[in-house]
Amino acid sequence: MKTNKQGCSSSNKNPVLGVSVAEIKDIVCVMSFGDVRLGALTVMRFNKIKNAAITIGFALFGLTSSVHAADPATASLIIEAILTKPTCMITVPTTYDLGQLIRGQVREHEPLLINVNCPGKDSLKTALKAKVLAGRLEGDDKVQMLVNGQGNGTLLSLKPVNESGASSPVKLTGAASGTFCEVDTVGYRQCQLIPVTEVHSEDTPGHASATLLFEVVYP
Image 1: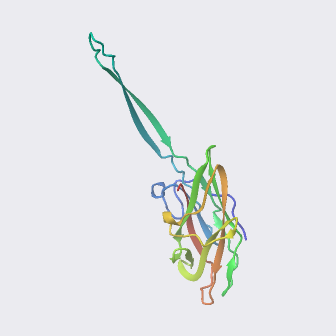
Image 2 (image 1 turned 90 degrees about the vertical axis):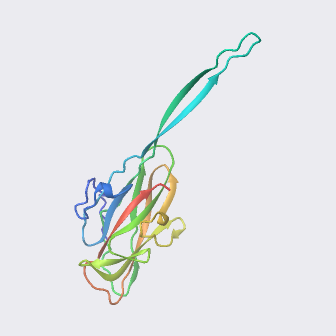
Image 3 (image 1 turned 180 degrees about the vertical axis):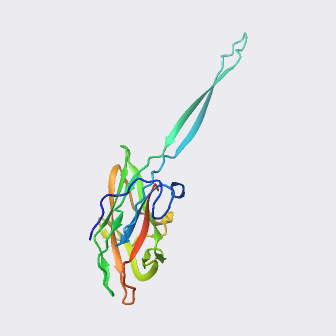
């Protein structure tokens, strides 16, 4: 099995998929499974800055005496703050080679490593989500791989690895409710996914592939 460790290249547009920066939220990386080598896409996520204005008012009142009362004096102070949401970078191999698949076999493959790097010294809670770009979504956690652009019957799923071992397959719908590898940490961390292939006796032979989109989110 060969894994391209170059990660994602910086580009404003994916030369294969034609996905522009304006079409993708957060930071995403595109990778492919199979023999076909697709270009990778890294999109810089710009910090979302929100302005918050706080007005603090106070009044100074003079003391009242038996002779006269001083005129009340007022003053106001405006304090502005800029709230910046930290941005994390995500990198995955541009391709992941599943090797030779055999009909009638269900097989777990070597872990796929996804790296997340969050600059800064403050702890930040992050999670990942995945979406099918090329392939046929089966249910919400499997993708049917393609041979010559057509579904060949072979299914691919991904299981996250945690301290207690592999868990249920990750959702491949891209929905906010389908996040995985959620953790609150500082700086760099790594998420491991186990690719699982299901090859049936009637599956179409050939060079099968699927393309998934991974995105880092801030729950």
